[in-house]
Amino acid sequence: MHPPVEHRPDLHAAPSALRLGAKCIGVAQEGGHAAARLADGSEFRADALIGADGVHSIVRSTLFGAAAPRFSGCLAWRGVIPAERLPEHLRAPVGVNWIGPGGHVVHYPLRAGKLVNFVGILERNGWLRESWNEASSIDDCARDFAGWNKDIHAMIRAIDVPYKWALMLRDPLENWTVGRIGLLGDACHPTLPFLA
Image (cartoon, rainbow, N blue to C red; front, top):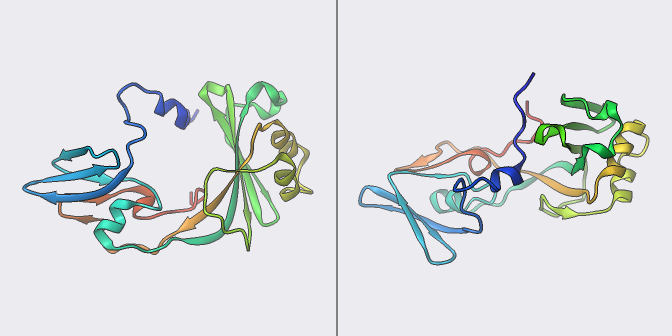
């Protein structure tokens, strides 16, 4: 049995784990420390700073200059489904990967099986709105998966709001650190969620 997948809202709710709403607008290093400046005017100082601030990383652009990410040619549909809305065979405590023409769908349990995460990825040209939370409709999502297995459509119909996500890439960096500041995750090496 694989360890459970942590649901992002559950991590956000953990006391003292994160400071939400703290937008980083710049970083600097001087006098043996690194600092992050926040939009509210506050600053954090530490021995080292890790910029794990995503594909649009402020830390990356500060260290290595601005460069726009590029569309990978893949669009993801995302949704979280209350498990009780699904037939029993779609609530199994395992991850499932469906392969179809020009795409695939994965679904797996969250929150000890109370929720099911749905991600459907399709090869796509022409949809370039760069967002991971572009709300759409059940009908649009179902249309994109026309002809797929009825179980895929059962999951799509059980989603409250499906979201579109343009999967973006950046060219690799030779270095991920400058002095006391480094990069991690999509800030330095964005990868597609199905790389594994």
